[in-house]
Image (cartoon, rainbow, N blue to C red; front, top):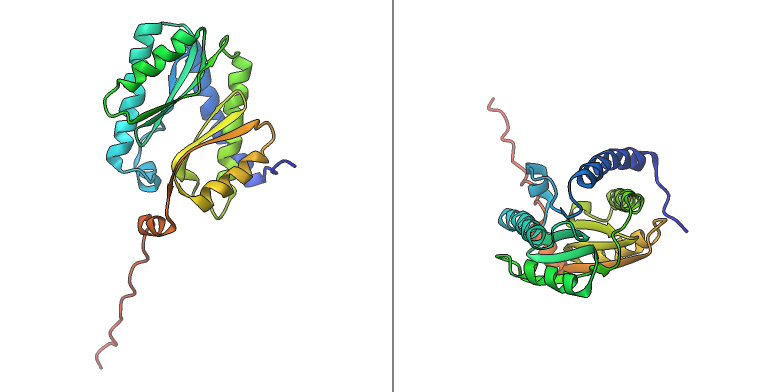
Amino acid sequence: MTHPILPATARRLGAALLLGTAAALTLSACAPLVVGGAVAGSALVATDRRTSGAQLEDQGIELRGANRVREQLGERGSININSYNRQVLLTGEVPTEQDKAQVEKIVAGVDNVVSVVNELAVQGSSSFTQRSSDTLLTGQVKAVLVDARDLYSNAFKVTTRRGTVYLMGRVTQREADRATEIIRNVSGVQRVVRLLEIISEAELARMLPQPAPEQKVEPAAK
């Protein structure tokens, strides 16, 4: 059973796909190595469960890692670098096992990196059609997370490669299980890999905005 795409979801998905397609076209014209940082802005900072400092560090890790890998490997392979709370996810394709190990070593040596999850496949680079399909799938996954009223969609960072959806973020066990359940029902998803930092419900409650205290209104003097 696939998760239905509702009209409101379709509008959000359309916007996401326009951005994703533009990014894919730009990347295909320049270089196959890409980074996964989202656009920085006040809205993202306000809803992201990382500190603003951690978000900036993650962006720096992605950029520095991409530059160093490109210097060493040139145009060999098609590599994605995503960092969340200093944990780095490597996805994509490289020609040899030596290249796979080399990319991991390079990225692990970037300042502030705590750990590296190496999901690089040793095979030929994916086609433009496959990468476009992954971009579409990422948009669909983000759309259904937005529609889930019991989840905060911005708590998740979504990456897709060859039909495998990778989830990063700081979430409760309930949120992790609920998101996995929803995503597995999206048509085209082959599997879901969770690289999530699990927090307690109490910790989540402390992160959420607290309602403003009610102000007492004094009666007007007669």
